[in-house]
Length: 210
Image 1 (cartoon, rainbow, N blue to C red):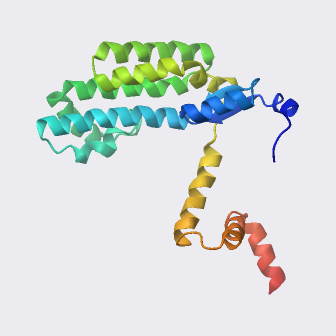
Image 2: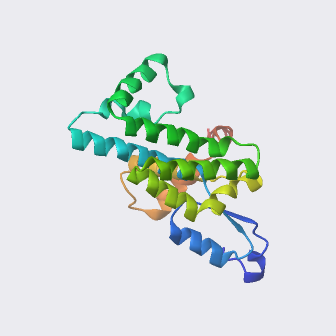
């Protein structure tokens, strides 16, 4: 449903990913709303940069580092002792990988703060660490954080996230794959609605038809 222009002014927050296209649309369509970049996409961007550092080192030094990809991207408090020791061995060989990993740990802490002010301080710290690292992908991360810092920190206005929307979208994609594509849009739409109903409602409908 298309909102009249005057009603758009009642929208206070718009949560989106880091795509400039959607961010600019949000600003244009909802001029009084705060643009919030979803924290999941921000963290994913940082992890992609960390993994890119691993990929570059793997290519340059011709070392197979695929076996540490999964544990490299985990939070440090989620690491088991044997996983940390495995990482430590690679960190001794490649100090820049350790530096990037430590930066991403500080990067995650942006969303562990109690309020906007503390988060802003942590964000500035991460940007400084990125620039001091002299690692191109970390420097690129710093530029992204500088560009969208207020949109990132707007998360602390009311902790807005589009996690539920993303989860629903992923579920739709799964149903689409199981449906082997979309041949009949009307039938597919009905299937989407049925598959996303709470189980209690499905049970009730089934009981009424038996």
